[in-house]
Image (tube, rainbow, N blue to C red; front, side, top):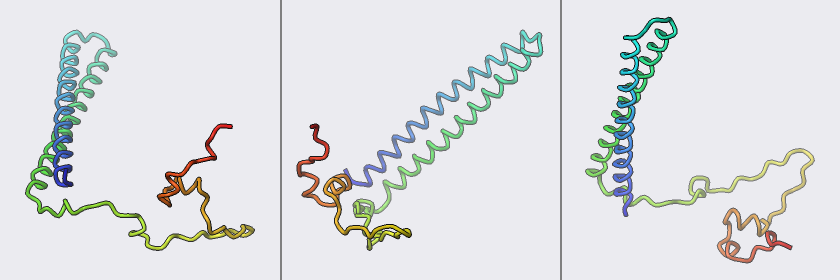
Length: 146
């Protein structure tokens, strides 16, 4: 799978997700709006009037979230279309090492009273960080049960 195909698939999936979420919030908004309408027919106390306004507000919030999900779904579909027509430069992307970004390794800044750091790295740390390929495959003795 090329990088371009991967990104097209990702945006397509995100668009589907946002459409599903928009549908869900639209249904919830309609449900709460309907509840507030029914409550207004039987409203006799101040508490019921407060409940009606809260249900209306919840319904409106769900409708707003549904609109946002619809906008995001359209955005991801537009990204899909742009990626399909884009040049194949995306396929040339490949992972690089961090040292390309920071070509020299940072040096420690010693605080007053600290000893100089030893130049070597312990085997255990080397295995964890992955500094040396050979160390990653050698037997780890510090983790063995005694």
